[in-house]
Length: 89
Length: 108
Image 1 (tube, chains in turn red, blue):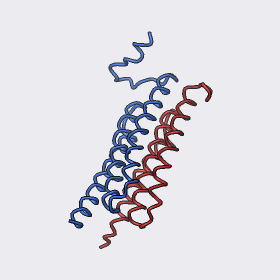
Image 2 (cartoon, helix red, strand yellow):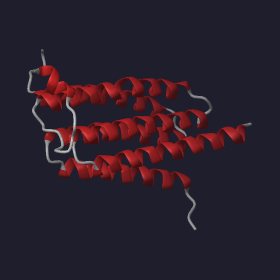
Image 3 (cartoon, rainbow over the protein chains, first blue to last red):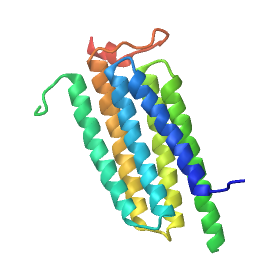
């Protein structure tokens, strides 16, 4: 019986990421793919938090903060692209 | 005291992981862009906040985790709102069983 707790936690997050990847590959419109990419970026933050706990290296939490802000900028840029405007307006 | 904090941290992480998984199931199963956006964004934001709070408890009250929670809570709904606004303005239709569209009524 394998009771490796970080392995099971990572497996649940990896299952969530594969559901997002299914929506990215399969999505009928481009808005579906943009939503799935945004959600995948937030899931990576959870991965960084788990890594910061179970490999005791605290810099993963810095990576999580930076990943949140860059994901936000990416979501805004993709929304502008979807709306069909230029980036300077 | 210390063992109670560790057990509470693990419970927070498990609840957050379940929220993440259910949000991604909603992302796959729901019929429309707007339904998918609503289900997945709310569930995944709350679930990631729970994971970060659990790691805050497990890492000896590391304040950067609280900062990350603040950034997630501020930025994730804003990005989701921008994506929904752009999807509506780029002309993506609602699901055929949707009953109300206030934004379309306001534009007329």
